[in-house]
Length: 153
Image 1 (cartoon, rainbow, N blue to C red):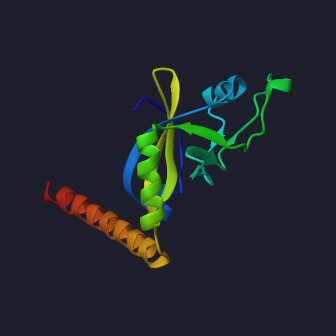
Image 2 (cartoon, rainbow, N blue to C red):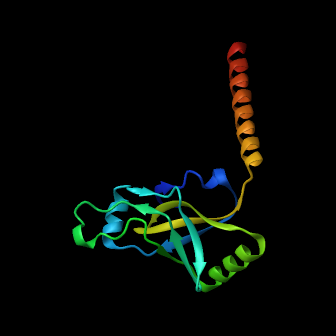
């Protein structure tokens, strides 16, 4: 993975990520310039497969200030570049197992913008609560152990 541009903050909170894959994305010149400035929001984004092609929806790329007439709609759907084999595999998984395609992060790789897609199963509310409780417990244990180690010296 190259230089990270943006992360989806709710992807790992709302979904249990089973597998990840890398996809290219079709963008315009003004969108690339805006992305280089870090003006991307992936919070409500998701991917769908329609007519044998994969699209990313809900990702907000702010208009470039000097872009004037060349700026596109910030929330437009953007095509993801995947091979036919990958698309067939994803289609089967989505239909059979109720798995969602969730963008996890966006990054540069050799001057190309790439999206890390995750195959995610939606978490229930009690799963989220359990995960938060485990995180709190681990933090408490780490603090206790650190305090214990400092008292020994």
